Amino acid sequence: MQDQLDRALSEAEAAAGAVRTRAELEALKARLVGPNGSLTAVTKVMGTLSKEERPAAGKLLNAAKARAEALLAGLLSKVEEAELAAALGPEVDPTLPSPDAPAGVLHPLTRTRERVLATFRKLGFVVAEGPEVETEWHCFDALNTPADHPARDMQDTLYLPASFRSADAPRKGEEALLLRTHTSSVQVRTMLGRKPPLRIVAPGRCFRRDAVDATHSANFHQVEGLWVDRSVTLADLRGVLDFFVKETFGPDAETRLRPSFFPFTEPSFEMDIRSPDLGRLSGRWLEILGCGLVDPKVLEACGLDPAEWSGLAFGLGLERIAMLQHGIDDIRHFYANDLRFLRQLA
Ligand code: DAH
Image (cartoon, rainbow, N blue to C red; front, top):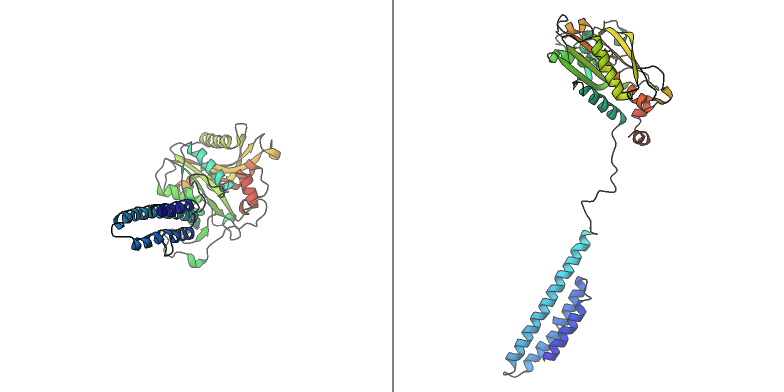
């Protein structure tokens, strides 16, 4: 009997190595302890033994059954592990960088804006913002732009329909709404809302009723600058803008101020730059921004006494700066979302 049990178990143990699946395990189990199993066959022999022989035989049988159970239990956990591994798929290391998620790049105008703001931050300017839908008063009247100024013409400015007007605006012009044509309106909001001394740069979207071509867009971006203090002078204006130009276009860039006219500054200038590092534009004077000393009428409109306060202001187009920096000849590239263009400038 001992021999028979040993043979049954050794056979089962030898077969166990090949068991991979639950079905194979069930088959082995059946061969051992099923109705026609090899251990079951030995159990049946028990009935034929004498009373005296039975206790010893029973012991042998129980030991053999325990060995069989341990074998089957071991195989079951091996099969379960294999099933779990199959369900989880191939081994992965979640700490490895993903190969299939290409990183995006910032839009060139975003990067130019951030660089411009960072440059003025070095000089103590802080970022200010204002609304894109603006009142006629903040955009024009407070900035000393007369009612018959061509910029205010319907042909140049996008006005909101009369149904959007506010009936109880405190000042004439505050009831009429438009899409701001420049970020200079943020100057007005800043002076009305904060006490000088103040130094702000205001980035933002502007809108004009322009036909779109290589150098014009109905929607473009500006950064406005304003510095108000007790004795701000033209020397400060030059110092601030020279610093900006050298940080942006390199130490070899030269600047010049050309007399000009803006309703909100007196005197007013346009600043030109000339640089040997601008590709095919190298060596030519190129206009980059408008600037001047804040007109006393603007200070007054914003509740500041021109006898006490003075200011400098400037406004630049971000598209223009980015086009000069990268040698781009058509403003429409910025808005086409062609990935080849965007990646090239990254
Ligand atoms: N607002 C002017 C424009 O849109 C730019 C400008 C010129 C802003 C002179 C200024 C300035 O603050 O002093 O063309």
